[in-house]
Length: 171
Image (cartoon, rainbow, N blue to C red; front, side):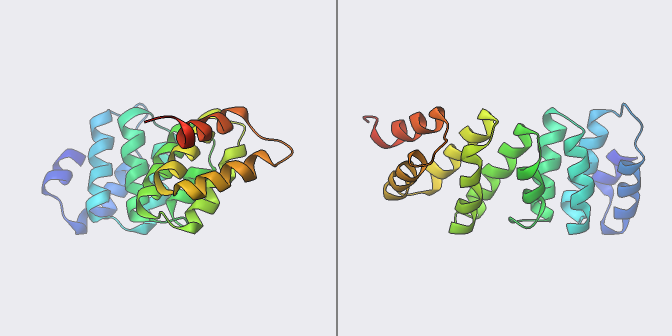
């Protein structure tokens, strides 16, 4: 049913797709969930972001990535689905959210939020935060960040090493 709706459905079928995704059996064929996520991305709205987040958090692989990206498209920005993904415990979902937000919102508000993750206990989150900051910050901003970071009473050595490499490695 979802595959047919994904191909031939329209906005009037949104309630059917929501119901199918909410009541899907476990385990559910991967292609059915993917088709439902694609449909919501085409015809859904911001109210579907929570359903998509639940799918992302309870899945893995392609379903997880697609659902997280769809949630962020339907509820964009730091106040949308990205906030829940950044503050969640899943490092892969954090990466999806951080990289998406870095591309869409390379402003000072995002930089302030992502900098907080440089002191996160999870090394993966720290590395993603560095990658985001490196992609949207100037050399001067990164130099200031390195100086400020190392002046704190506690910091992570891998963050210092990566910032140093980004700033001072040849070529």
